Image (cartoon, rainbow, N blue to C red):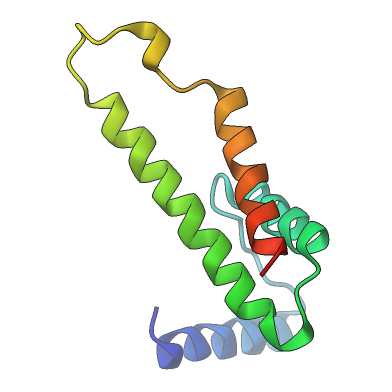
Length: 105
């Protein structure tokens, strides 16, 4: 999202709140879980003050890469062996490993 668009949306939300006293908004599905993952990675990694944005961007890039790999694996033909399919535990291990890797940066 372009900054001007985001700023305009935030301004409209603020004005609506000021005028009516309430803003109705809902979080996209999965946002809270993603926010929890980012928060956990930052708390575990303890990036320096000036590196927080880069740390979060790198973490999210890593998560996007993992999701892309999983989606690519899911598109394999049905004849692929089921044991080669990633498990939820493997995905969590990968996410924690990624957070640990960025914690060392």
